[in-house]
Image 1 (tube, helix red, strand yellow):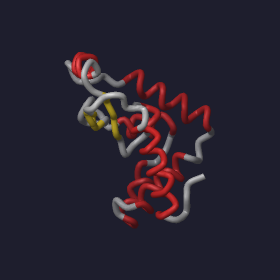
Image 2 (tube, helix red, strand yellow):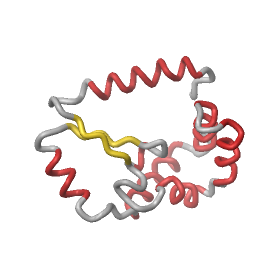
Image 3 (cartoon, rainbow, N blue to C red):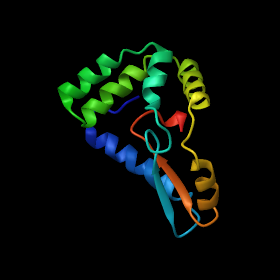
Length: 128
């Protein structure tokens, strides 16, 4: 369930962040952005096409609410209309067809020898 109130969502978010941070082992963390940094396409657009989700509906939420909690909540509600197995399958299919920029895998492998890596996205976490 998506929290209705932003404060409730912040509490959940901080709990998730603290849980993820507790998994880090080293003294250094490298933070990487997913879409358009590690690969060229916006993976959400690929996912939306597969899932037959209207991008204009998502855009309308951002036009109405801006890049705020309510705008992203609207997007999450649109994605939550999918059943879980379809959501997982479309995420896997999207991940399987994207090509990372040359050198990304080598960079990740090398970086993991001295740092923890964290990939962030405002899109679909399961793809990354």
